[in-house]
Length: 260
Ligand code: NAP
Image (cartoon, rainbow, N blue to C red; front, side, top):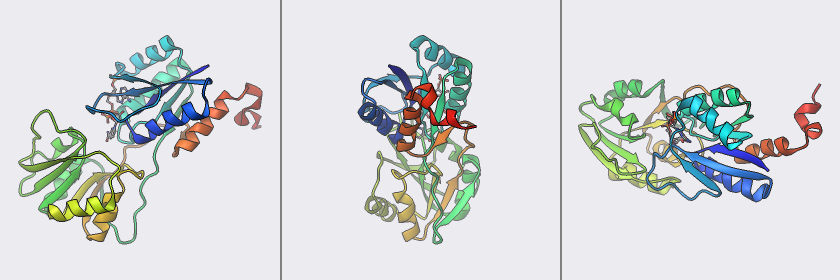
């Protein structure tokens, strides 16, 4: 029995846990790990643990103590810190690591995207572009917009924040993806949004807002992804399941071992 740890907190990670249990019953014991950011995480098949490990050293110790022999980092593309820690921990513990990183979005010819490096850069330009901005960012990330004046913000979050947001004029809407184009179009019209600010997360679950923004000819301030960690990577759950299949094959029959 192999022991797999999935670093999760994404729809892809949950789909992978379910896929592993379906495809490799009795062969892989799967545990999914969540940081504990959301109050009510969606259903996840198999075992789930919640909370930080205590950095790379803590994660390396966890891998050794639990006899984990495979790790899939299926965290969000903007969760750069935990991915760096996973790389260091797996190197230290000698555990094979795969990154499951969702496909980036591709710009449509009618899209009006303004790509920026980080949240601070987005905050610097937002008031030059619109007066009613829709932020699809996390609670911590909206802090970058604290000094912005003359803009009314609509902030969509998974949970209602525990503390007030540090924004002057704002409204909160709570929601969890996947979202439909109809719903996103409605939100844009209802709040008279004239600019969207989002992360270049990629994937299907949150892509509808880009279609709705394109239809409404809205400018989109798109914060670029942080660079990926080096290492083996796939962009689909199926790809991750195939990687696991290869790891389960007896050593002499692993495709990568047959290469010259
Ligand atoms: P991060 O900045 O990369 O990580 C911060 C710390 O949170 C890590 O050092 C680690 O604490 C802990 N952590 C993060 N992911 C964890 C996991 N899956 N299991 C256990 N501990 C974890 O991460 P983040 O951007 O705050 O994201 C936190 C979680 O939310 C991730 O699981 C991610 O997949 C999910 N998420 C993030 C975003 C986003 O935009 N950032 C969007 C959707 C979902 P220790 O150092 O104590 O181990």
